[in-house]
Image (cartoon, rainbow, N blue to C red; front, side):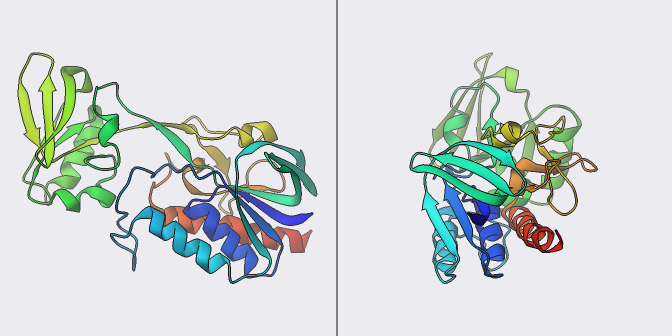
Length: 277
């Protein structure tokens, strides 16, 4: 039996495994190889690694984990999670593993507005976070496919960065096409607009069913509820990364730095609680 099984090999899960491994606890990290930022070529807003690819960040993290003898990393798909504090069961294609505690770091799945061509540019010339992607469009023209106060907030945040930002209703667009290092927006009425990039808002949902299988409470925004120490409502189950939300905030700050921080917190809390109990 492992002390902790971490499900998810993104930044939150990798950091959780590192934190637990540094305390010489037996930890198994299960990584499906599917990531929310899989389409992103360069990650930004992460000190000392600004501009590095997410794939390279994961590779370096795995190299670091290999230095700790109590950490095992396995690339596999998890089918189900069950059990309770002291004996959780995690089923994979290779069999069933057991641990006293679990850390969930399985991330979220994004659903974009139904504009043809938009999804093909997701993570490249179509983004949702101005902190992570705004600077890359410095001095350029961009479109904001977000209605209401959220769209206005993004437009105001980008004013010192871009040359021009237009708020567009997704319903008014017929297609988004990549053209000559930028994007061509074709409106339903036939008009065409050229921009360097597009900011939009994705609807996020849980990528994996394990929190629900274990009985963890969720929040109206779709995230799994955690307390300030990364604990879910189920004893022995912790969560980090984009999938984990505090009830006191409107939603997660979706960034690599925030995911790493929450993974560290979840891993540390799992070790601390194990000692105290």
